[in-house]
Length: 338
Image 1 (cartoon, rainbow, N blue to C red):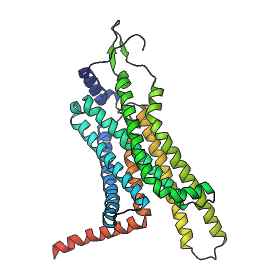
Image 2: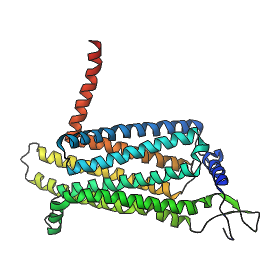
Image 3: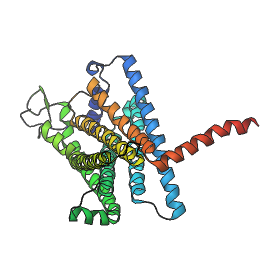
Image 4: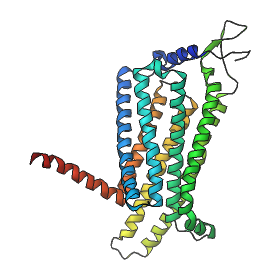
């Protein structure tokens, strides 16, 4: 890695990228496992698109009908749209890279996918963090003056925070892609000016690259974890208080609190798994076709779908709308037979 090195030209970079993307020597998966993985990923993408499309449609209809939407509904619209875009992008990318590798390996196409992937992922992380933060502020029971003031102002702040998250995600993704275009070609072997031995174009370490790429994950991750944990502690404390005053019969309020604790715990676990998988994936710790890299892709595809399904299940309005949709879909075949 010493000596003066020159980056390859566009044609060489495309050829080297194609070799790296499709080199069977680097793959740890058999053809059967590759096919199975693609089928699982496509199923996760379609499930996520359908679930998030349903959430978007319900709140968009409410927005149009009432000329307004609740704060939580606004966050869910932003979150669902970002996830629809993300999973559609990943499905398109895996389709193009599997069917037309030469086109996918072109610089403009390759970097367009990468910058869009980073941007939509960061947006999704921020919106989910704001959703967790909003639920914490509205549901948690704390008597601190700063907390009470925040609860009073949170509905007015959320729209600005959502657009600020979009700006931060876009800025960070552009920053990451500038680093990538300048330094990521260090993984391509080239010839130095004074030697025929292969060397690598590198000016910063892999650790530094991983730091810049994953900087956008840290802040929403910390905010989500803190908000979720504090909400769980507040609900747990309130549940224990209600349990000490219970008369023996089932209390619907207590059951609702227990359900909220479970739902928040599930959200926290899913969010952490997704953030870790994204961190590993962006850090390039493993080969492109390795088993661990594939596992990270499966986790990243599963998170938006599973989290959105849980949101539908735990939201009374969405759950009721989903049952109505199912009822109408069951009626259509009967109407056609009449």
